[in-house]
Structures are given as structure tokens and as C-alpha cells.
Image 1 (cartoon, rainbow, N blue to C red):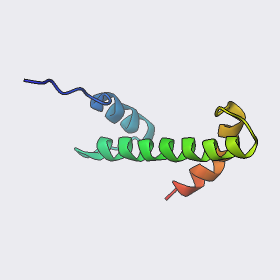
Image 2: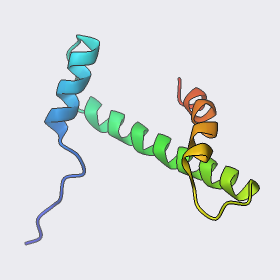
Image 3: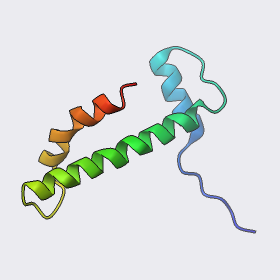
Length: 78
């Protein structure tokens, strides 16, 4: 029987969110938070990749990420 691998520690995520917001976290809220985080990171890397190609770089560098971070954060502000 194959064992499943956890993507992230659910209890840790719940404790962090509870500590930051001073509110209780519902049963599956941590899953939604993790999925939103993964979508954000995917979009950030995609935008940084486009930016680095436009500037002629072969790799994504810190400058590319810094330039697109604010715009990507605005997309996910909700």
C-alpha cells in the first residue's frame, strides 16, 4: 500500500493563521490558504519569467521577481 506524502503541515498553517488573525480557523481553511498561495507563486514565477525574457536574461533573477511582485500581489488581493 502506498503512503501519501503531505504537501505541508496542516497544524502549523492553522496555528500561524490563528496567531496572525486572532480568530479560529475552520476545518478546511488551511487547504484553501495553501492552494491560494500556490496559485500566487505560480503567477509570480510566470510574470518574472516573462519579465526576464524581455530584458534578455536567461534566468529569473531577484530583480525580475521584485519588479513583478507588487502587480501580482494586487491581482490576488481579493
